[in-house]
Length: 179
Image 1: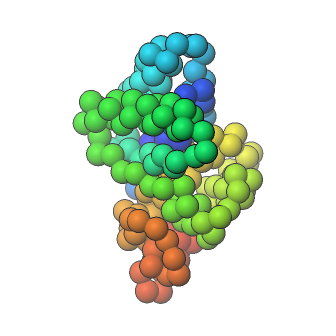
Image 2: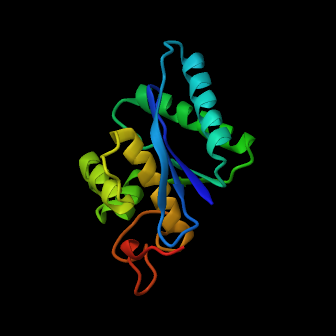
Image 3: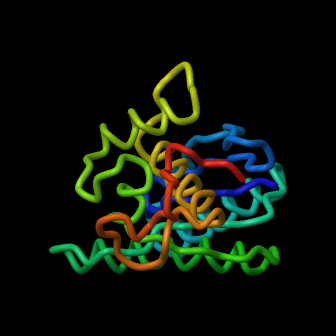
């Protein structure tokens, strides 16, 4: 079973595809959908087309996406929300179940700290998946989203905010992932 993780953006939308049928999540693909349009409607159309193409090529069984966090710039948050909504509609139109995870939840699941920075997420995604090269930041974030969903499927991550050991079953660790 494949999971498609999406890190939405109105300029760059990261994606990561993981195979979770084995004992450990296996890297399939990652990269970025680079939005070239200036007009908002055309940007959203490019996000939709890019996600639709990824779904057509990889045929994932599940879709995971990052939730929007309010920032100081309301305009940026609205644009991000629109790109995110476009990706969700695309997944729904392809019949995929959609799961959403907050940034702190993703950082906690991947690095062990909800306050990790992008470099820490990149490093841990590279290490967990045994990649020979570090993925671009948006692609690493999308892989982190897919990993978080893989862990959530196993009960190693709970929905909502993290704290202490609430995201793990007794005796388990996110490092001990087994589907």
